[in-house]
Image (cartoon, rainbow, N blue to C red; front, side, top):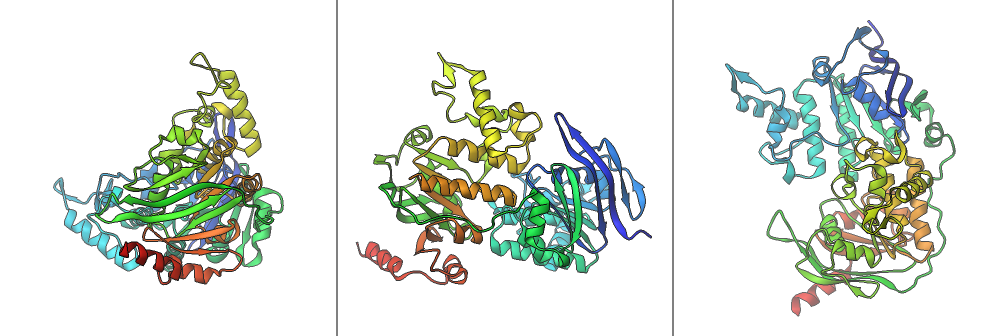
Length: 519
């Protein structure tokens, strides 16, 4: 019997204008966690989509346990016990957790659905693997981390033995990442084999047995994790040394750019407020980070700040203008740029071309229109400049559909558009989510460059490394309130974690709260 449970030999896959996989070989051993590492657009997701039957390769062979197999579609993959958790979840939002898990594999007797039997199996699986979910909750009402558990349970429900995780930690909190790593280790103890696509070198070093590296669609090699380090992996991945430390000098503070006073935002899920009397300032020439565990009001606050949602109380001032009730376009005109948390919902029009997306908030400017007609030539010239400057990779250049681009390159397009507007205030929410180390290094340099040019930056991040290394000040949000303010040079990760978890709060915050209550 073959040493390898899955072999992908000499796989080639082409799309218009790009060879996504160029003669790639990947071999997965039984019971191992095998990481697949590469830059944004290196061909990782494409290769896994070939294995899962979503794409058909132009050349190459797939073997399972030494025997050649044909995988024409995901049903064939499931029949071979291959399951996949996609980077962008494939869930029906208005269905319940249980309905999503059994969709396509519904147990029935004489044509009648046997939901009680399915529910029992799902509950058993969730308890066995520590993937606790509410079977009756609707997908649209649960957190992103919980949605990922549903995707994993979909694979386990189908008794899959080969598990593909495509960027599984890109949308998770640090605590959820630790839980997922433990779950993956438990899977391999039971003899399951895991293919793990990620950009995060720390996670590879922590959980993987071996790692295959791709660069620009080509195979760079496979290494044993016990015999390598982060620096070597990053060199294989991007072809050069990567600077992991953020290089920035002392800040030079200017005038107040953003002033937030007693902002309160109601919750859409319950009667309590999602954001409660939040006040702070961001000055020109500084990066302020709003840190916290996901689900503590950061999303609702940013939506109120950027005009995506209304607030019930408070005032927001930008460059001296009261923008509390201003439209999104006017906030943009007053100098606000926004890199959103959800790039698909709020960042891009997926069926527009890349060049159309790059001028979404500027197409009315004289540079891009004349007498109400878009100047297509100028739009393309501008788009090509940003594509080159930010290394945005796409099959057909500026005319590529945004939907067809990799997640990381979609993110780079949004970052390019928002920074190039030359804003007074840059609101950057998870700006490096889903990006490779080379792109993260570049984005961090761009944020610091904005700060050094006298701009104000409000960074919202869940990544503790980013929280500790990029900003000049850290504000911790817990249950919709600011519970602490810190200098990243003086605070430890452990102390920050206590505030983020709600175990501690600064006396100043408590005093202010009691004063408000007495008033």
